[in-house]
Length: 112
Image 1 (cartoon, rainbow, N blue to C red):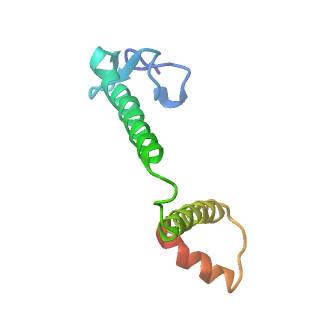
Image 2 (tube, rainbow, N blue to C red):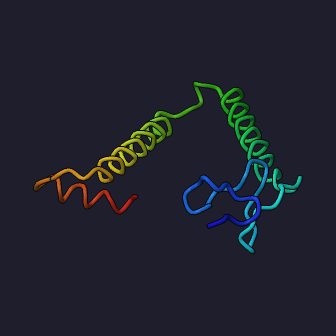
C-alpha cells in the first residue's frame, strides 16, 4: 500500500510524518507553520521565568530567617517524591513480590 501525502512510507503503518510536517485531521501531513512553534517557545520562556523567580527568592532570603521546620518540610517532600518515583519504576517491572512487600507496593501505588 501507499502512505498518505507527507507520511514516511518506511515507518510502521505510515504513522510518522516527514521532517518539518505535522499530522492533520484528514490523515495527511502538512508543513509546519510559525504557530506550531509557539507552545515550545512559551514553555521555555515560562521555565526561565520560574527559574528567575526561584533564584531571586533564594538570593534575597536570609539563611538565618529560614525556619528549621520549613527546611525539614522541603527535604521530606523531596524524599517522598523520589520514593514515589522509585516505586513507580518497581511497579512497572514484572517481578514476583510477596507479602508484606506486595501490600506495601499496593498502598503506595495509589500515588502513581
